[in-house]
Amino acid sequence: MAFELPPLPYSMDALKPYISAETLEYHHGKHHAAYVKKANDLVAKSKFANASLEEILKTAEPGPLFNNVEQHYNHSFYWKTLGPKAGGEPKGPIADAIKKAFGSFASFKEKFSKAADDHFGSGWAWLVQTSGGALEVVSTHDAGCPIRQGQRPIITCDVWEHAYYIDYRNERPKYVEAFWNLVNWEFANSNLK
Image (cartoon, rainbow, N blue to C red; front, side, top):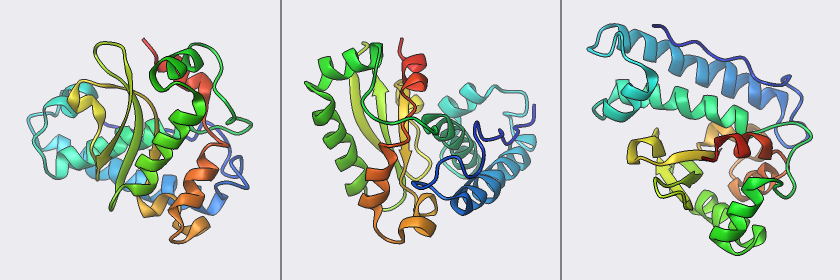
């Protein structure tokens, strides 16, 4: 079963002024597309040729196959985390779950932003739901994904430089602040158990 580059759920210029069309053209059209191509090449030559994405995410050994499949999953999830005319404070069950776990949205936002801002090198900041149902903020390095640790992703922020360098250069905190204007809380609600 071949992986496919999913189309963006919005137009290339829909996330302006926070993320430019140029960033999306490179990030989605080149970086993500390259992960999909490489993942397909590697999976076809492996014991995972007929495996599901979830099986590969949970059981592949560290290395090129794992990295490219994880990056495909992480990016596909990231595109859905973002949305035009989104952002602001959460609504619905996710708002209640955040308040229960972190005390307030402001406290959660500060903790998540710190995880994204302070992450050394390439990686991801995540809001996850543990197997016990609690919400936590975690970060993963490189292609890491919380599914590997039995956690359910709720939202993510890509903190690889290619996610923000065209628009923000080396100022990751400005990108992370802009991220909050794009968070698709409906998607977050759909990910809660």
